[in-house]
Structure formats: C-alpha cells, structure tokens
Amino acid sequence: MKIKDVAVTLERFAPLPLQESYDNAGLQIGLTEAEDVSGVLLCLDVTEEVICEAERQGCNLIVSHHPLIFRPLRHITGQTQVERCVAMALQKGIAIYSAHTNLDNAPGGVNFMIAEKLGLDNVRFLQPAANGAGGSGVIGNLPSAVSPAEFVKTLASTFNVEGVMHNTPTMNQVHTVALCGGAGDFLLDEAVKQGADAFLTGEMSYHRYFGHEHELLIAVLGHYQSEQYTIELLHRILHEAHPTLRVLETTINTNPITIN
Image (cartoon, rainbow, N blue to C red; front, top):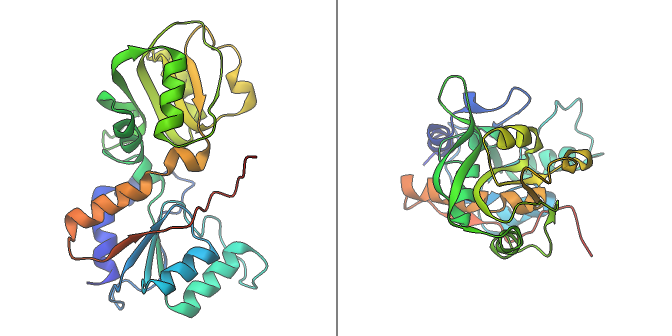
C-alpha cells in the first residue's frame, strides 16, 4: 500500500476543500507514489518525540490532526521545533500527513466524535456550510436533561480532565448542547441563537464568558483535551477502509500546557 492510498482514504472522508482558508491540511512531507507504508502512527501534534516513536515502531507515515507546517518556512536551520521536526522526518524517511479543519468540518468528523462521546442524539451541524458539504461545530440533545453541575461533572469524567472552566449559568437544566473542539468560541453566538443550553469548546477568550449566564452554560475543556478522541476517529477511518494496515496510536501526550 502506498502513502497515496492512505491520503485518498482520509480525503474521501474529509475532502481537502472543506478546510478553512487559513489552514494547511494534507501531505506535509513525503512522496505519495514512491513510498510503501510500513505502518501509520496517529497523533494530534507532530513533535520530535513522536517522530522518534514512529521510527521505533517501524512506521514511515505519521498522520496528525494539527499540521506540522502551518505557516510557510523560509529556512530549515533547526532554530524552531517545526524546523527540527521537518529535518528529522526527512532524515529518517518518515512522511507526514495532516487532517485538520477539513476533518473538523466533515460529516462524522471531529465534532461528531465529541458528540458521540457525550451520547448526544439528533446531532447536526451548528453552522452548516453554504455548499451543504460540511459545517462548523455541531448541536444535539442529551438523552435526558441534567443540571449544569451534573453536565460539568460528566465532561470532567468523559474527557479525563482535572477541571472544567465554565461560567455560572442561572438556568437549572442542560438538554441541548452545542460544541466545537479546539478553538471554537467563534460559534458561541450561533449556539445562543439556536437555543443551546450549553456550549462546549476547547478554548474561550476571557471576555467571551461575560453576559451569557442567563442564556447558557459555557464549558471549556482545553484545546488538547477537547480533541483527544480525534486519534480514535482517524484509527476508525483507516481501519474500516484498510483492515490489514498497521495503524498505531501515539503513547505520547503532546499537550504543551501543564496544570498543577
């Protein structure tokens, strides 16, 4: 199997045109036609440790969620982590492919995976794309209403986080939940507009918390924590299409933020 075959599978599920204009999803490093896949290592972020892990595991392809090369490189001198990772991957003959906002915006993508983990029903795009092919965020319903405190407790358990940042809402139940993994606070107003009882995301600007306590619960998990199940989603996509393909999940926590 060639790297191209893996790329085609991922792009069939999450076509590159679904990515945001600022993004750089797709093949980052490698020759899709020339290389046979010895194994695929899945991760959220490409770091030097992850590249070394791929080499140890005999994987010559890394599939990440966040692109290694996000902004254009002017040189590769080893001065930044990105430059060091590019040089290391080339030296070790490891290809890198990233499925980012195209996977966020795809039907059944990252946000649907989060909704699945929460057990939401009737899940649909929160902000459908104009072309109808995808959308931003999702909204759905809990099987039964719970108190805001109970919902926050469920979030902490489901996503294995020590704490959830949230406002203090005045309403007494959460039934309809809108969400967006990663940096999703741009969808807060849409969640309010659609009558969500809660809005869940990975990052939220400080000032966005103000003034919504009478409208909905705002809950923030952390960027890495909100998207951690993307690795499981990527594994599912590749395994269903290529059952014999050797696919591994990184054992390295690449979250750069530590909370003590």
